[in-house]
Image (cartoon, rainbow, N blue to C red; front, side):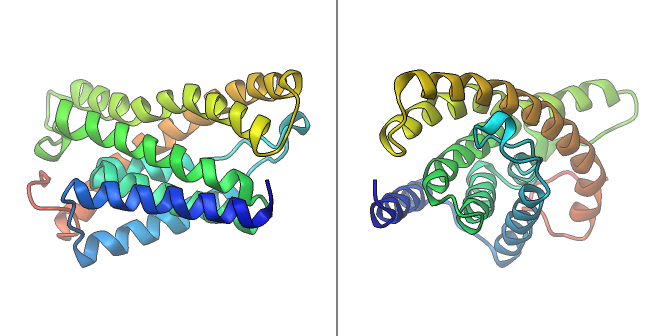
Length: 222
């Protein structure tokens, strides 16, 4: 696949996700857009601090997914997905890997959607706060919501990556399978570390952001 074709595919994926966002009737406030931008930038920086090219497979140890999940918990799934998709796909592009940016945009959006759905439709985190006597349950809900999308990524990243390596980069089935196995292990480590970081940052940042009025209405305040 040529570089031009990769850019066209990337644009198509980005457009499809933006259309999906519109169909969900998601309306962004100025504060939400600003927070998404900050989280996208943090995702970008976290990826730049990665341990690259694990076993020569282009897989990297990094904490970029932390801010995808964190944005989803603080705002909603669409916002989280966009923060991660924008920040990490741009990181791929500037790192000279536009072919990876196409799948990155999709995969990070999926992480955000899953985390947001579990956080706000299953555990209703916007209506909860860490009240005395309920620390354990609150922490468990935050952890489960954070890890939900990251766990899904453990399976979707290697799976989609296999077809990317086969049909975008033209690798043989055997090499693609080896890369998929390595990606599975690397993604699992990334997910566990990102979940820990996300939970810690959420517990620290949410009270401050809610008190400052930077979170959507309905978010519980401490």
